[in-house]
Image (cartoon, rainbow, N blue to C red):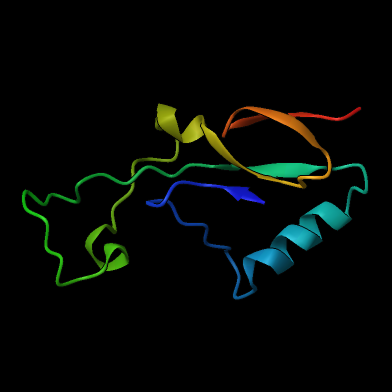
Length: 96
């Protein structure tokens, strides 16, 4: 289960589906209950008005540098059977 906001997107760096990428990562560690994906923050792209004639992926193409402090935040993909509860969408407590 992925815990992301409506204005967030997950893009694998390959042509594989996100489910395939997650399965590959987690299959390497049978004790893993999920993974965290770092944010990549995008700003206004220099726009001062919203142009709804183009999609979000076309309008916002410039991201903050990789070392931008907010990019240290993660979003979670968690096996719900392994999660006890979520402190917030960025941090889960797992069953022992």
